[in-house]
Image 1: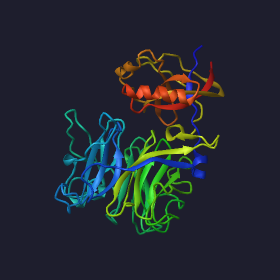
Image 2: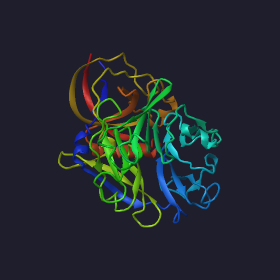
Image 3: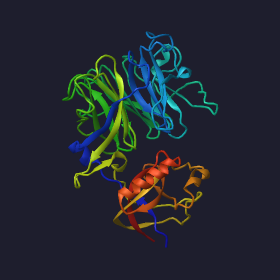
Image 4: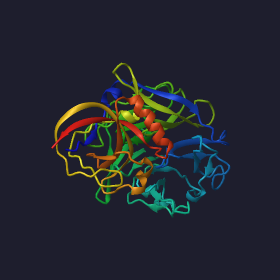
Length: 415
């Protein structure tokens, strides 16, 4: 009888309610030549090796330093350091340009505006995909229109979740700028839907970023109790809708200052970025690692280990190179297990990794767990403690699986 595994995912509500988080290895980023420009809106590419951001007042912007905002990018070198940044000329024009989302499936970028007449900016978002020769396809408008009551708008789109977050000013808002959501319903985007009063205050909420691995919204506001000007906050999604959120938590002194702090983004490894003018003058980019303290022994786990519990369900071990084949398995009893595995990839249910993807793992027993979120997760290894698993994870990352991370397991008795 074959034993299948699904992941034991640690509930995150306690950590948000208590705010037991830290921002480690905090430092200002040196991307070269941006001392006199405004830098904002950092967001990672799908492979997490390219950092896109916005530069304002840069002399090399399309149309000159007074023409608008341009997309710039920096890439990691062999030492995992960020290199000199360059203008992404192919996706910039004389208007404001910005990356507002990344599609992890096909590595396409979602972009601000429509690359046409400002009269069509009510469409708000376009997309472009990198071709095999590293050039970019012509940006195409997303099939979604947005109110044009103000040009002061920030978008963030998560296509896998089928949701767009938009901060904007409207006549019916609670404050100066509020955060709204659009949900994908079939081929259509439905909205705007205003989210709960716990997030939207009587002042301004801007720069939304949704982290799906945490089910958490990060945003900036000058309407909650903060350090001064705009501070960065986080709020946990409650229930199955996109409208209800927990009371926001201030991200703390390491991130927030008496000046402007905004445009926070974070990823499963804990790597995070934000913009601030805490150093005086123009806004610069900062980076660090966001971690959360557990209540147990006051230990600290990385964000990748603090994700929401998923109820046990039928597990299918799919056929793909190095993935063992089994009949459909029925869970008949759940039992907590102390053990850890290394996840190397997650993909939508209707897609599979290329067989060659697993070749570097050689004889590792790769298995698949099917989640209720529509993702199939591929993982291997059973380690008795997290320290051993983390050492193994480091070796796996060194052979090319840059997104690999450690997860706890749950053991099931299978028919």
